[in-house]
Length: 412
Image (cartoon, rainbow, N blue to C red; front, side, top):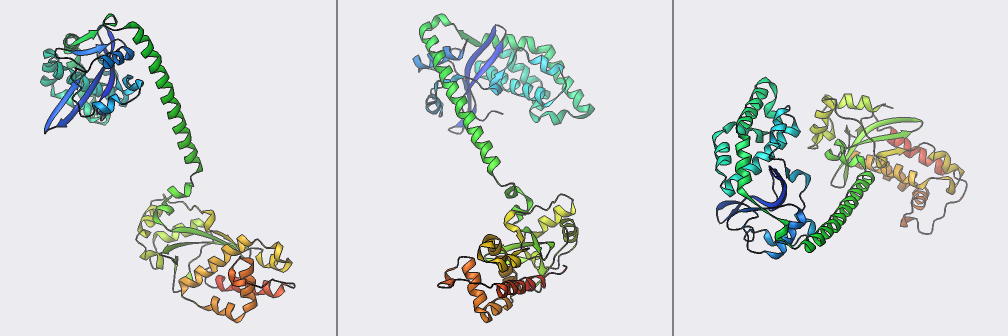
């Protein structure tokens, strides 16, 4: 079904291909209307889009001038009179589609051609065509789509549509031939028609360039988009987390409720798993944990149960604490401060979720370690403090912080 207000269309009748404008059904003043480009007596068709454009430039007394969207149509570029591929209708060649199987392409073509043929018959009072459509209710079923013709009964019905067309279509086409008036090129200024052809070609080229540019920008945007943003995890707002620490790796999950972290776990214990597959198998049948209170948890659980959930770790949720302690011993420049900052934020999240003050208490009782971390992570709390060798005590302090985190893991 066409949804645009006014459409340039190409229709194929007995004498060839012609162009006109079609306004499918619209409502105005509580009444339904439909129209084609026409004068008081006839629906007008043209041998080319440029001929129609010249006519529209010279004539304001036609059936579409009162259409509520006419001014918007006229405000378009010169290529507004060029039909798109879906607005080309092979009326005379319709039986060839029915001769094939009821594929999506064939059923769609028949449906669209029936629609415009019936509309043209109604608007132009093409009696034989109108009687044909009114007398064969089976024709309406093509608008249901190709799925309607699945199976043997569907094929039989498709054949029934074909028989109705085979018997009557010649008269239908003849009726529609008589319903239109071809505006000959000799009725128009040939010089202006040639100029209009050049204008249409230029406008079409600009439109195609803009379309290609838009498609390229959309493709670049898709390529630049983070695929994680379209994952089930992003939809649920619950993230799988991978933690590498002390030479091992574990998986868990975390979300945020407001600004507060919530881990997969209970009573301060973070449920951890050696592989992502272990974690997926576990979440199918387990709901006794803090994340189960999050409304989207059941969405993930259902997908895991159906085998449709895969663990995708976003870089922001991948933490490696390996090597930090040994780097601290080597000196300030040896430490990856980004790695350290992420690791400390994970420790702080875990302590916050567990409602445990042990991390803060440790740093308060070891102010030099607190100053060191503040300095390394660029905090203003390190004002005036500059770390100096040896750094063994800072490395040992970091190992204690790691141990506090590991002790929260259910398996390690």
